Image (spheres, rainbow, N blue to C red):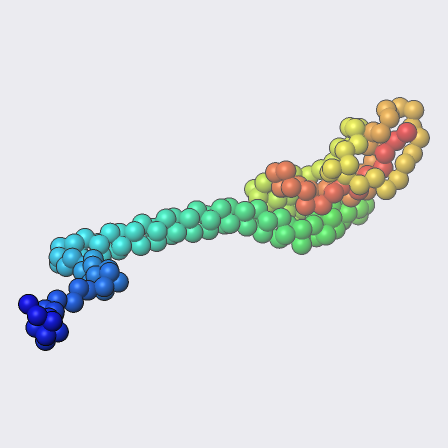
Length: 182
């Protein structure tokens, strides 16, 4: 081959090879293609999602029901205590009227009947009187307003009750107002 032939003869054009970047892009496109999800798989996924929502809603409702029941159980004693507290001055006045001297026995019997009915209503509601004459002073249920010296009574003993206290189970509605000795 002569030089002319070499020059004239062009090298055969090779097929251009794809650059490594282009090959990577094609592979990514192929991997990005998601396999088609069947209708059954879609329904299963939707069913699982709805079941999860249902269980969460059921648990939330159950918690609400329990919380509401607990609140109702706590509200009732508080409502009773507040209502009774409003009637305590009435009870005090009926007690004073029952203990007052009068010449009219029918009037006194009528006052005693009303006072007894009020006391029975308090008992039905679970209200207890706090009147602890002769017992050790307890600051959780009594307020001491006076102090006397009495050799017959022991140290910190309730000598007299000025005003009865009332409680509902463990909750004090009104502290007893007392005089303590020594």
